[in-house]
View 1 (spheres, one colour):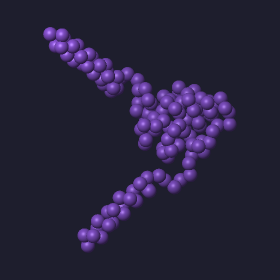
View 2: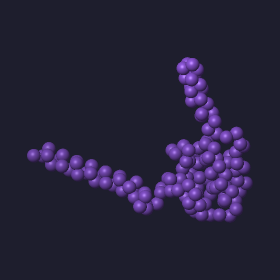
View 3: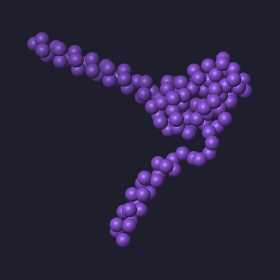
View 4: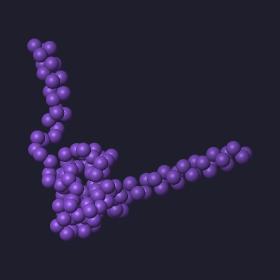
Length: 137
């Protein structure tokens, strides 16, 4: 009885990743370039600045995740409809939050992300200065 339960749990554990992606076909422009090379270049530049929300370390241009494909399709559809890349970017930020972009704007929420490196650099400078002063004595 206990062995069967453990076996079922192991099978379920291995089945979960297989169910992560849907069986639906990809969106029309997920993996298909736009017919107009100028529009495709605009869309591609924009896609390289947007973070995949599933992979988090890749842009939507580089990710194979299904959600990244959907986001690529949204970008291309909106570019074809005549929207500027800036407007598409703002729409995606409104929809998914600042995290979707690699360079979030300075706000009360993102201030720690922008200020932490400066504060840590200052602390490191103070520590280095004090340690050099001690060695001179």
